[in-house]
Every structure is written in C-alpha cells, then in structure tokens.
Amino acid sequence: MEVKKFSNFKNKKKLTMSRKTFVILSVLALISFFLRSYLLSDNLFFGPEQGRDMLVIKDIVVNHKLTLIGSKTDIDGVFHGPIFYYLAVIPFFLSHGDPYYTALFFIFIQSITVYLVFLVTYELMQKRQPAYIAAIIYTFSFASVVYARWFSNPPLSIPFSLLFFLSVLRFLRGDVRYLFGIGIAYAFLGQAEFINYLFFAGIGLLLIIRYRSYLRKIPLMTLCFAAGFTLFLSIGNYVLFDVRHDFLITHNVLKLILGGGNTTSFIDSGRVVFETFTNQIAYSIGLFSGGWGILLFSMIMFSLFSMRRKYKYLDIMMYWLIVPVLILIMLRHNVLVQLFVGSIAGYCIGIALVVYWFIEKNRNIGVFVFICFITLTSYTYMLYIEKNSNMFFQSTQPELRYKDQKNVVEYVYNESNGRPFFFQAYTIPYFWQDAWKYLFWYKGMKNKRTMPDEKYDDLLYVIIQKDRSNPRFQEDWYKGTVSSWGAIQSTKTFGELTVEERIK
Image (cartoon, rainbow, N blue to C red; front, side, top):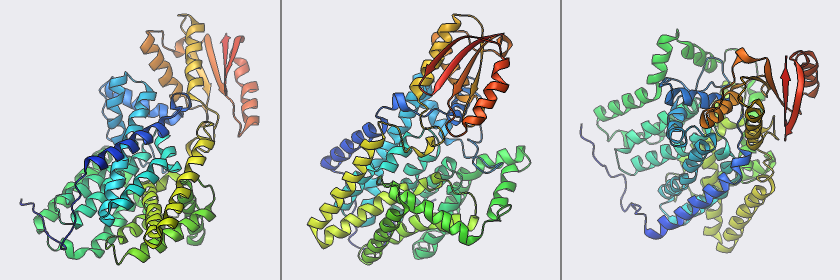
C-alpha cells in the first residue's frame, strides 16, 4: 500500500521545534508536574474505585491475569477499555505496587501533554505566539490540575483528545500517515472513557462532511485499511468480551443510544447538560459559576467566528466544544462532570484564542486579559490545593486523606503484632472494601507481614470513616452491627478515620 503526501494549499509552514521552544515547553512541563503533584503524597484520593483498579493491576502483574475490559461506567453492563490498567503496569512494576508512584506516572503524562497543547494550537494557527499562550494556560488551568490529580482512567482523555486533533490537522495539512494516527487516537479515547466513542465519532462525521474534498484525494484502499485498523483497535477487545458474555455491552450500548429507560425531556436534558458544560468551562480557569462559563463560551465562540476566515481550520475547535454537548442532550442520560474531560484541553486552547484575538486587536489589552486569566486560576490553585478542597472526584468524602489511610494500615499491623486478624471498614460508597484490601496487601507484602484473613475475625479491626453526608445511617450501623463484633480493646483516630480493635 502506497502512503504518500498530498498538498492542500501553498506556502504552508511546517513546525520545526527550535531549542528555545523545546526549553520553554520543558520548563512548562516541569511547572505542570509540580502543580499537579504538590502535596499528593498526603492528599492522594485513594477511594474504593482506586482500590478496585489497583487490585486489577496487581492481578495483571502478579498473577498474570489479563483483562479485556476496564472499569465499569455509570451505565450498567458497559465498561471502559483496559488501557488505563495496561499503562499502570509500568509504574506498578517499577514501584512494586506503590499507589502514589503509580499516580505520579499518570501526572507525568498529563504534564508532558503541554507539548501537545502547543502543537495542536500551532497547527490550528500556524503561529507560535497563540501556541505558547495555550501551553501556559493549560499549565496553570485549575481544571487540568484537578483532573491530573484524579487517579482514574477518564483524565487520559486529555492527551488522547489532543493526539486526535493533532493527527486530524496534520492529515489536513497534507500527511496521509496521520490518517492512522487519527484511528489510534480515537481508539485510545474510547478505551479511556467509553462515551468518547460517541463524542469523537460525531466530531469525525462532521469533519468528514466538512473536509470531504481532502478524502477524495486518498486511494480507496488506504481509506478502507485505515477504517478497518481503527475499528479493530477500538472494539476488538469488546467484541471478544461480548462473544464470551452474551453481547452484554452491545445490548446496553444500544439501549443507551435508543434512549431506553430515559424519561427526561430534551428541554430538561439540555438545561442540565448546558449547565454542566458551562460550569466546566468556568472551572478550567478556577471559577465556579455557570454564569462565568457562559461568558467565556460566548467569548470563545465570538473569537472563533471572527478569526475563522483568516485561520481556515478553526471550525474544528467549534466541533470539539459543541458536539459532546449535543450528543449528551440527545442521550438524555445522567450527566457527570467527567464526561466533558475530553474537551478540557479544548477549553484551554479556546481561552488562549480569546487572548490572541485581543492581542491582534490591541496588544496591551490582550496581555492584560492573559494576565487576568493566569492570575485568577493561580489564585484558585493556592486557595484550594493545599486544603485539598473543590476536588470534584472527592466531593462525597472531602476530608479523606491518603496519609491517614497509610497510618491506619501501619497502626493495625503494629497493634496486631504478628497475630492473625481481619478487618471491616465503613466506606463511601458504603462497605466497598477494595481500597483497604489493596493497602493491606501492599503494606503487608512490602514489609513481609501477616495478611488479613476472614478466618481470623476473632481479632477484628473496625475502620470507620466519618460519614458527613449521612451521619444517622452511620450511627444506626454502629449501634446495630458493630456493637456485636466483640469487646473494644483500643481506639485510635487518624483524621477522618477511627480504628477500633475488637476481640470476640
């Protein structure tokens, strides 16, 4: 198969990254890493879902038990892909299973994403200045920082979305090889966050319609091969899983697309989706009001429309921002903030284009607007990161700290003093033990200690996480259940966590 270049327009600029550009972006990547990892050793959110994921990764590395699917989505019977697990194998192996260093590995990926932000913006504008502005805004963006600190699979949508659009732009600028890059990025996007398959299929359909003249120049065999390649990477593992499990995922995806079980009207769905969407745009620069998001979105769209004649590929930005909103409205499904994670980098680039629009009109005003954005998001960072607040993924248990969890496990091992024991934990979501199972395994394996075993529940350690959202339920559980688990021998509190040693 012949893969060749074609020319779409004359005098196009091909970016050659100078030493100066590389140094600037490397400095921004280091700043990004610092901002995203600051105090993480104490404040890492290691909840039940993180424990579940680490147990799966442990099975892959230790027990050589491979998996075709990733974690469960919020839709019954539908799963993300396993790419998060297989990427996590690298830091898991190198750190011997340390959750903190595994989380740092994904923060490293989010930090070097600053290079992709620069490259995508450059390909859009063919100018370095807006690309630098976008890279800086991404570095300090509050939403980008928070998503990077979330130890989970959806944040991978940020670098993969940029790879998708970088491949699209490089393809449109004449390099057919990037047609396969589009396919790889699309597959990775869906593997990281399942609903990305719908979002970026919708974006891809609009791109095909808008730039169909470019596709006509490509040999049919190349197009067919690229389509087959994309399909295989995207759903190959799901097809194999479905064949083994009576097409479980297929049935539930069709139910979602056809609106099965949804009673929300399009008007109500549109209101909720638009509210969440504008909140996410505001969140990207450290604001917490949809009103600010509406203003920012309006400014972004005005800038794109104003500059689209001069910069011919800015329509792509509009698709990136708007298509996910329209699809979510049509699905009429529950809207979680993380469903917009694939657009976070788009918001950063969009805000950078607002700044650049002002710079083109009046440099002084543009610089002032840029400084305002950076100052605002930096202030929000300083206000909330040290306190570990306004982390959307930790909203139901804002005071849970990784340092307290480690202290609890260490305390239990020290108190048990080699005696066989078991544990029970009150968790949020309720009674989901996976995080504690993993931490006891990790600490026990690392220090060659006796692992918890249900057979030895005569010595029981009860770990109680303070439930601020439903204290009455916790009180009833304690009085009705825990009181029957034996006599209290000792009690110790670490932050939000209380440990009781009980003997039957």
